[in-house]
Length: 290
Image (cartoon, rainbow, N blue to C red; front, side, top):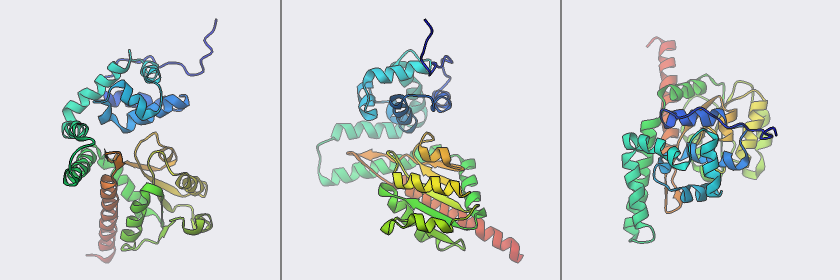
């Protein structure tokens, strides 16, 4: 009997490291089932957690059964969860030891401690997120994002729900450049009317994280349809924002006691503003002969 499975398993294995495995996951993402896509997004966005979490915890985070996690690993040519986890543990031992140690301390203190201790844990989580951002930020991708903004006739911003403060900061900061800035903050649900002024070549800076705000995704689709460029600040290259974006910057903020911070995302947003301001000042100096 012929195999009727429409999604053939990947046979290339073993992988040299976690990055090679994630590259295979990204390449084979689209045909996956809904459950396997959820696991793929978790694995890509939470690679440091995967080095520490057991299969039960990983399944809980993905809202699937442990058998689905095993099926995911086997689909990509691995023997099972343990072999997949070993790839991430090897990377964590080299690069993410400070963040891993922090996570272990959080688990030991969960549900106990004074308000001051909670504050220290929150601060520690933010520090760990910034360390991860500093280690993982691709300089070429960041420079390309600044170039995209610098070349745009106008900048547009969309950031809803948890990402809303990032949009507010960018709207405040970018007004200090010479760029026309339009913030699609959603007040009165007027963003659809505002988008009529968006022109081909403008750049939309879209910020969203899992589970991804539908209003942000709708604006991204509309902007792309009008010929605008999209710069996505998100948490995974498998996110729906990344699929439609011309440039992608990733920030994976840590969670403490179930609450995710915005520390690394806001740092990334401020860096974008400063990079753009520097680029525009450099261009102004060349034009004026300074």
